[in-house]
Length: 368
Image 1 (tube, rainbow, N blue to C red):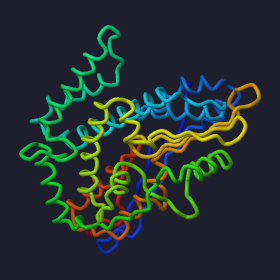
Image 2 (image 1 turned 60 degrees about the horizontal axis):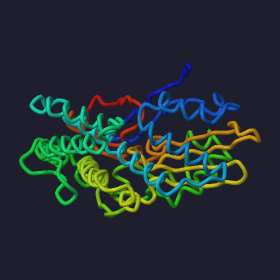
Image 3 (image 1 turned 30 degrees about the horizontal axis):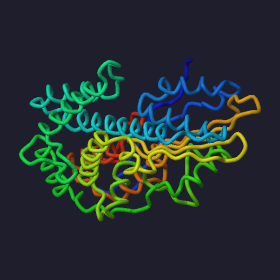
Image 4 (image 1 turned 180 degrees about the vertical axis):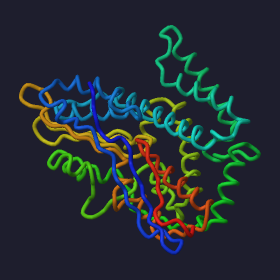
């Protein structure tokens, strides 16, 4: 299967009098999955998802499986649902850890080897264990991950950043840069995408299709989704700058490791909205999965023969990088006084963690 589509987001900032006065976002082009798989067995679409989505492939598969069950009038057994939630949490942990380690510590040569070993252990966590000793293998992998995290400075939910560690030094540097550049008190908006929005979203997905998925909004709302949004929903944060967003990611990583070590039922109870499915009428179903970058939605309709009649998905990136979305609102009106601030903009955009690459450009920066 060969797909040709624009797999990058372009973000252009217009600057006047050292202020960002405009943020233009040229979104990616989403693969036309409905056209590609119409009239084909749903299992063919399910098998293709890991090739189509290199990031959060597991979440996409869980979303499609759950949507298919809803369309067929089926319901997963509690044990199956618990396993799916545990798999989603493990993938969320792995994605957030990779992003933190690669993006935040890549330039620190002193931790290059520990980071590499930790990345290898995280990859092993998502690889099926040897059938002869699955529990022992998993326990050993988790022990290795915990030791690597502690060495770098990731602790536990009560103390996510351990003092005197490379991560603590990085956080101190980030705070100083935020204070110097005026990024410390970016007001937080609490329009956050949640499970309460699922019904409206999946209805629009199945009724409107790609026109909604490419530029989603809910009665004029374009809420934020992702790590910071999940954290802010629980804690009502007053600031949404780069430091707060990094802190939210570290705190979630620590909490996710605790849930991964818990049994499946406990993990499911701790994150009850991690996987949700919805029947939308005869042969129509939808699902929502809380993945690393935010809330992912799938909607599907089957024909009388059980093959795909309609399919649509909505990834978190389409909310956060909407032309009127959280990235635009976060950057508009921000002061840019030099190279440090320009670096802070890169950090801020990167903290929204799009599921594709992005290019950031500045227009009218001669005086900045």
